[in-house]
Length: 187
Ligand code: ADP
Image 1 (cartoon, rainbow, N blue to C red):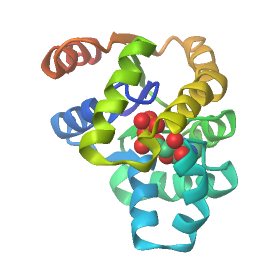
Image 2: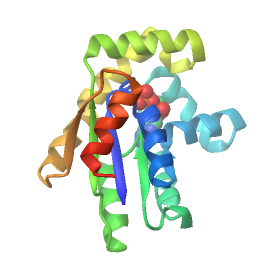
Image 3: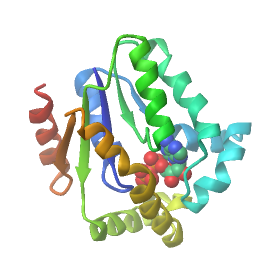
Image 4: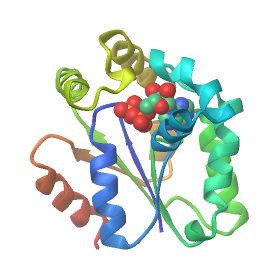
């Protein structure tokens, strides 16, 4: 089973994705974590990505598409995975759809975490105090929210046509939201 967790930056994708992956025993593929690891290790990909990342801009598809393909092709992800942080652009969505279709698979569920913009800003600002993520600076936060609306939100319409999008209220306790996701997926 392939499940995509979609939502604005700060909506809780990482937290809920982790809970879901552990419960279902599926690997979680998180492009943001992969990029942070590549930047920390100073790999060529990490160095290329850093300037976009720090400004809160999307890392270009020319860098990301290969990473996504490689992750989907890993043996662990043969029968399913939780996708967190991608697809974020039309080209990424096409790559995911095509890669799975070639294997006779498809995205089964899309969980759309719904959180108001005020709450998103509040959470990311609070997180910047704790985690010190370079893209949680005020200007980068504004960029990320704007880019989400422009590039990623349109994917919702694309997937809604297929009838696989479930809206999940993203406010409440972590447990409440996890419970709602369990109810939606049925396991
Ligand atoms: P958030 O959803 O809170 O922005 P992520 O860890 O998913 O957190 O993403 C952080 C940053 O990593 C993004 O602003 C972007 O620079 C980069 N990034 C992550 N995933 C992608 C992706 N699929 N395509 C392009 N850039 C990405």
